[in-house]
Length: 245
Image (cartoon, rainbow, N blue to C red):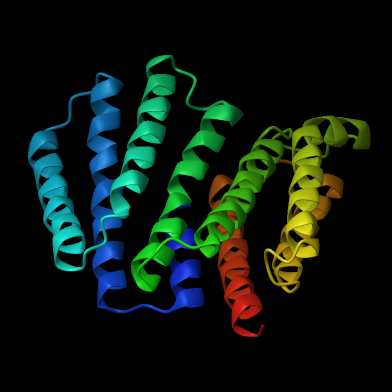
């Protein structure tokens, strides 16, 4: 969820030295999130403070380089938004609600902000492209939330009835309707290239096949590799959609 928006966007706008620095800083910030989560969960891990200091130091130095060295001060408001989203997610963790669909959607929307930042860093200013790439990445990642929930709730062995599968996949279906209305609206208004629709077709096929598949619950590892493969396909098709305009 973190790397897809970043890689996709850098594939669309290209990557220079500033983009590389930004990518490393983003990874450092993401890694620093984990020790904070453990503290909120009241879990103790040896060396936690040391690693948090390393992550924050690296991210801080690279962030200052982007701000002062490259003059990319527009990253400050984006960072504030990211901190706000992280704070909201940590609050949900404290309430033990981080595994709910709203909490996971908050997380993916925050992680997708890396797409907007990458556009700003590479182009040197805020453009509507940052908004659309963030939104497209967030819409795609949000679909995974409902698809995975649909699949892991299947019976471990044997197939569920069609009515049962439809009930389990209700959230995934509603989200697909919401997603396609949003993407079609962006295409019709000229906000994004028409070929962007092609990038979402494998996602729709995955949800439909998952909905009507008669097998039992897939293994978590298999499901993870499936999501990884579809995410890579989406990123490649998104890059092609913008590069072939």
